[in-house]
Length: 121
Image (tube, rainbow, N blue to C red; front, top):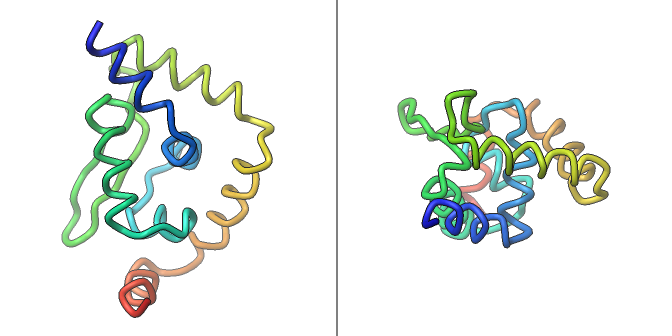
């Protein structure tokens, strides 16, 4: 039951849902997620920590960058079911659509440039 509660609690926040929808089939650097959400790095990190604890995202570190992605097919059935339901439920959502458009523009900016821009704010 604990695992199910962790998943449902993690899904009970708009920002975390937006992150999950952004990840979809792609892997993103934390700086890219921050840029789309327009939130403080510490806030985004907290949301990612909650998602990670619920096993709704996986991460890897590459140098100074941390990347997040949706879990693969080996993920727990609860997680796979929740993510599939979420993708179907929010596929036509206006906020999700806007996030996808913002992300498309952000993905054209080199990570180094994006991180430098965020450091000056």
